[in-house]
Image 1 (cartoon, rainbow, N blue to C red):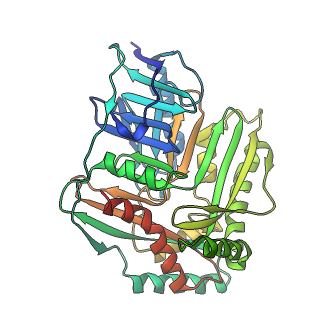
Image 2: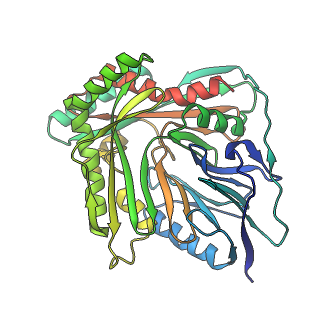
Image 3: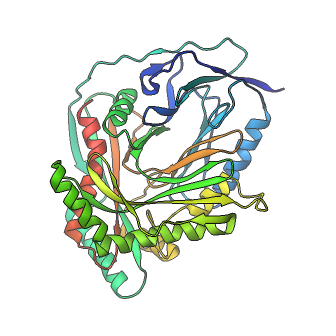
Length: 409
């Protein structure tokens, strides 16, 4: 027997991160006030193993087949939505969730989707005063000194010709004297980093600037970020820094590896791809990145090339792993000293038509089950010209989004 799922237009245009329903907040994907937010859980699944992307595709197909869809809005992101948060490594758990209620907003359109035979659920304003928790910080798997030594080891491997680039991540833990208000944290990330994709899925929350893949009908887009410099807050100084970043041989080399890995991964599935000749500088609140938007058109003969296929082909890209991929992954296992979990894994949403937006889970933290601590992550691309102290400073800059948002709860 099919389960009814209904999508209707909303007369108002709600601030997505500032609404609530009778169900708990489950998932979000918001950028610049647009996107999706989910409440409750109709179905959940945890997947592990090398075939997790294919298994996710099959599970989503099975779930859709059990739904009697009444979509009076249409368009990308309407109807039932699967939120995904895949682990970086196949041996860790990947999380899938279909919310009970989804509210979406794009341009001048807003809509609500709900599962069940009941009337349209009521949404209301989320109100939360600043809770001002007392925070303490502790190191992660490696101390600063230990992590710099691992970076130095990676540089030695690269200079010896073992590989061209490797991305090394590190973690810190933030402890709170009271449960962390997840929705308040979501609002702060959205307000402080409006040009990023602010996400929440199964306690993994963050604001990522990197889009692994967007599929809209047959158009594929992937935003590649590699090469970073910290902003000073002084406009003139930051313009000069942006110019130096655009000319930095070390950062351009790192960026080239990342762009090449994405373009090569998409090529078998696209009839055409477009790779700009040079990157642009993406300005975020606290850092600047070299960025390139790679686009393509899915080949009509590649009928098997759904968004899960593209995710599998693209992950892990050189931006979060290295070049060549297999050697970089082996070196990460040897040097990193921790499990990444879902950090640096594909995260986002997929609709019933197969359209979706999948980012890379960066600038994020994993809230523990009791809600009183967050494990936050940062990673840096290491190439032959890297310097351990500079990479440590870059990692600290990448931890700022989560640390700042937590400090202003």
